[in-house]
Length: 213
Image (cartoon, rainbow, N blue to C red; front, side):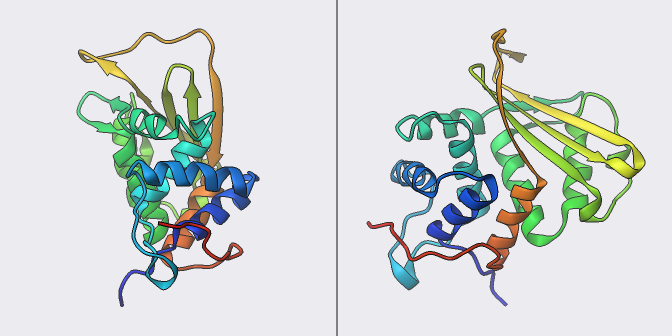
């Protein structure tokens, strides 16, 4: 059976509902991000483009970080390029965020977490012990004005936690950090809601498409 993916309008409605955001605001940001080529574009109605993990990741970055729709594409590209590095592994935030959403869609969260925590500063028990999806608590915290993202993962009943931070890096070092930090966070609730939608679930209210080519 082929993968069933959601349309952009369904993704907009799901994110707006689960995060408590205005649908018009999310839709306006989505339109600008799509016009910049950062969200798939193709057709209308039944032939409308189906959303991938990349599209969902880009829209989530945009709505949680960008102050205005106009700056959203630049924000997406900048935050996707943030990097985390441990003694043996390094990765871009954009790629890891897509993997997180894919894990939510395919119900493989434990395997994703086991790989993600290899980027943590210290070895974590989460790298070798797999838990049920509902055992994990997760927070993705977006920071500005100095760009940064920290992914927190925990299994509360085992009192296990891990955190992985992504920063801009120049010549192998993080860029200077502003003393002012503004943070916006989403939890596993958003991640699983988007994963369910990408999997073909329709837990959020559907809306007729308002996107035109």
